[in-house]
Image 1: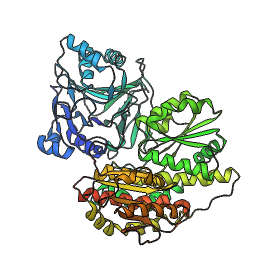
Image 2: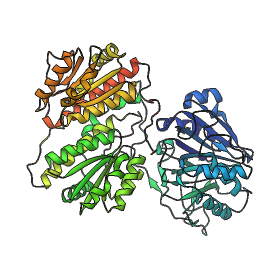
Image 3: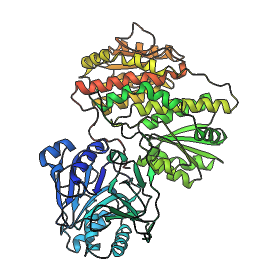
Length: 625
């Protein structure tokens, strides 16, 4: 189980609060209903400020970035246990004020722990499951200045009490940071790191650095360092100053048995730092426009991992592709391509339903393959599906946008779409990049399978995308004219139905409009009861073998008075509005017909006064089951 909140902690030679506020702003796409910071100054009582709202609002109201201290923790929350309120915001503090905790995840046995702690006299201030960690640590660290090894042992004892998932960082009033992760991402960033403190008798398993960042996302600290340590499940850490001069910090990492582990320092090679909106009003619009080159970049990926995956793909007895949200729609595209073009037995299963279907597939497959698709690589349902499949002897492959993510590390082989950071919560460029890579895999699989090799002109994708982006003013005007609609129905047939689902998802996510993707042939089997003169029907109707059948369904909707928006490479007098797409190979239409739907959803969001970057109630890495 995972949550979508953000954690950042800092210890070093600079004031912690300004760095923490900036880092939280970078990670705000992960969770954003409340914000909080705790700092410790000169080994004194911990100071905590927190409130409801986004980072900018809470900071302007509470002056978070002016808090004193060179060590601190911060958090943005996406509510799971307890309503959105100031008191439920993180950090949570122990009764005596000596320990503050920020936590991602779900403590499944929190009710029993809370009852036991309350019976011992602990007073709880919030409704969250996270607060129990602060009180457990309070009991464990009765003397924060005690022996370091003893503290590590007591932290291990606390971890053994927690059921569920967690990544947490605790700030102790003496300035130490301690924490751990289990099924929740947590990464340590180090500036000028070494395994040598200058003493020849030093322990190579201990890390030293000028500064230490601890975060749920490398975006939090990439501005300061590209050197990182990735904690494994069950690992914990302790951070303190290396000596009295406070010029260097020391980091100890240990396993769930309390043994210090020797961790490698990884250089982050991905282009995480490119997160500026530039000339665009929103990240979402910037990322829609970036598709002019991200599609080609994903399609042209060529390395040994691709060849290895193709070999595994064509030799598998059963292929299952899984994902959540837009990544599940990419999985449906994979099912169409692999089954129809490569003659490979393939099914797509939404990740949250995977557990209910896996036994059937596992029992009938000698060499089963699971391909997991996830932009973040941290999606809870997807990771859960991977772990279930692993237990059924599936080979695990993944398609990710974050090569250092948990999903990539837990896969036998992974491919990266190389789309760069996607900050907008709704998937745009990552979805089309996933599709582009799946097209490439289909081409290579058909060739390796001895079939007629496919030839697809994806090299001109930048030109095609530019033509679609050239309609933006027209799409903005269209959004203005339909902004007050209550429901939108998107009809399509064949592989285009997947794009109808994706377009409907974008309208729901960004503009808060009820939208539904419908098989065009099913319109007359029920949905027509909803169609009248106030209805908007978007028809995905390119000139391929689905054209005539979709046109028949358009006539049915038009006869009931619906306004028809055609997405096609051919104009038709049945359309009240036309979103024109380029005429391409029939297999490639899905890649381009989704982009005008993305633009429509974005501009409808603006017309309806919705923030397209940060939709309400959802977050980028949906890491909660």
